[in-house]
Image (cartoon, rainbow, N blue to C red):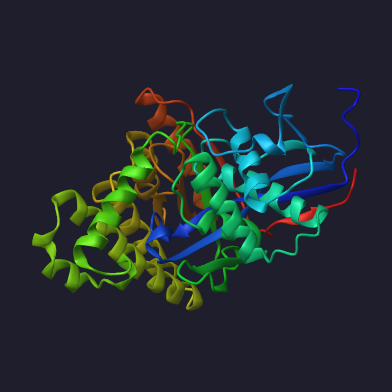
Length: 369
């Protein structure tokens, strides 16, 4: 539109792939993600009134209009709730024009929502000189998704989108948000991490994610602990009779996955990729059988990759669709892609998309263009 003027600030933030540590961030566990190269951009301009206008270059040129005094958590709206939630969570009192340009694949389990939230949060923090630290911004972006959008996500996605560094995975302690960079140089060992987007769209607002989190929280309450982080596997086994079958399975995933993250860090430091691959495989089995968030397409991608020699493979992200990863020798990547395409076609699935990404930097201010 003719009155949509140049931005005062442009910020971008990346999506992510989680090497290991799935569905345990809200249990105060450890996770090991890295930021991918694909980013979402937020171009923001201050207004002289209380009006908020939002548009996305990917969806349409239709402009969504509201105002500061109308901001309130509700079920109304669509993708723009993630943007409005961030404005609300940061306590912005001035009107803004916000233009979104997103390149993180939607519904692929690569955290396009956190990339959107963090790009907007990073830009607003700069534009209004809010002074929030990166950890504080991560918590505010999580608040936007939890309270405004209504998705009870943990803190992993927002943290890595803001705090990641090129060339490393980010070990994140979800209890206190302490971070440690873990070198993640696959190329030096002749390996690549293949990302397989099944193109099965998923949404985390449909209740599946919330139900599983509720089962974990119920187990915590019954066992009288602060979080599943405080539970050893032997303790869980002894307390099995106190839990329902579903609670036990969800808790078993969480407890064993937290332990796998620690072992994966040791394996990366030692450059022991065979052990890392085995842990990645175990993670998928746990997500498939105990947490029950996989689907036929994800299982097909994982099983095919392993049968073609992948060191390890698993589903990533929220589940019920989205993406899988396969850690494999560089020379095997093409063969694995072809075999997965053939298996998907034979099974009547959508043709998957493939891409690779090196660990990239977190949110940043971009040059004004």
